Amino acid sequence: MANIGEWSELYALFQILGEGKIHAGDAKLNKISTCYPILHALRNDIVNDYEVDSERKVIITHGGKSVTIPMKTFLDEASSLLQHLQSEKGRSFNIPTTQAFMETIGCSKIKAPATNKADIELIIHDPVTSMINQLGFSIKSQLGSSSTLLNASKATNFVYRIVGEMNTNQMNEINSIPEHMDRVAAIFSTGHSLKYDHMGNPQFYANLLFIASDLPQIIAECLIEDSLTSGGDLNKILGDVANRNPCKYPTSNYKAIYENRIKQLLISSALGMMPSKPWDGYYTAPGGYIIVKTNGDVICYHFYNRNLLEDYLYFNTKFERGGRHKHDFGEIYQINNEFYFKLNLQIRFLV
Image 1 (cartoon, helix red, strand yellow):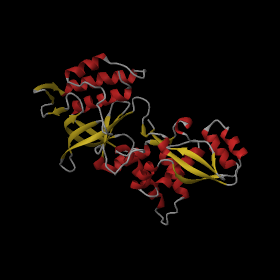
Image 2 (cartoon, one colour):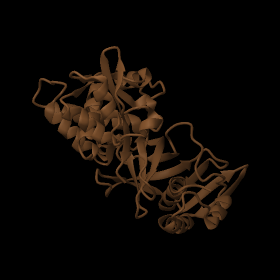
Image 3 (spheres, helix red, strand yellow):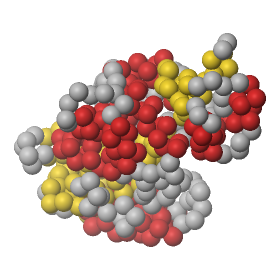
């Protein structure tokens, strides 16, 4: 049994092998004319290599034997699988017809085992550079619920000092407010404000410094903005923060600096960086992203077209937060004579 997201990985494999190529996408998730011919698809499975030959066939080799299957068969299986995924309502389920085909092609697992952010590796011919490269891609699906780009945890907490005189009675009164955004609003409506103090997790802080030294401050400002408004897409929240220029960049081009910093966070999170694990700037899914759209289109954001990948992430994500009690944030606490408050970072795709 598997969920829609896991089945979508298999759908992407079938569709890619059936077409023998993958189209690039723009920032709005539309196909563009650029496409990448696929020579091989590789998974960490019993059969690791699926070779696309020049005669519209897929050659599957395992245990000294080879099986050749027409590419059209993969397209037919992809179409059948898509119909199931578009109509399925359960959280986890079997699809017997697809599982029978999996046995035919030596595919033992719906979701390929992965030790990093790459769900599939493709050997592609790049029409721009005329090079042949083997690259890992992360697969995201729009067929189910929207997925996260950066997961919330206690490691993604940002700690703020409450500015303005506060007493224990005020602290308890605000902490008794049930909703997160109402609590943040109450802090400001009582004449207080939040000033970023430090990050809750030293490793996440170190990872962000690897990207840019001012990135923790920018994220901290975004989390306040997101908690004070009715919410909004990531690019809107960042735009509102950039308008205030809290980092005091002494240049007329300061808004572009904020956008660049957040784009580097997004692309690092997409291709390798995890908050609580040491990160050295190495991308574990260096090919980019593969998106399975609701209509079944499979499009690619290749790292070689870095600007398109950055724009896709920037215009298709939003800030949100994890569970308040689970991740230990959203409650005023006191240390000596100072009062503090934590906000939590999570980034999710819009669809």
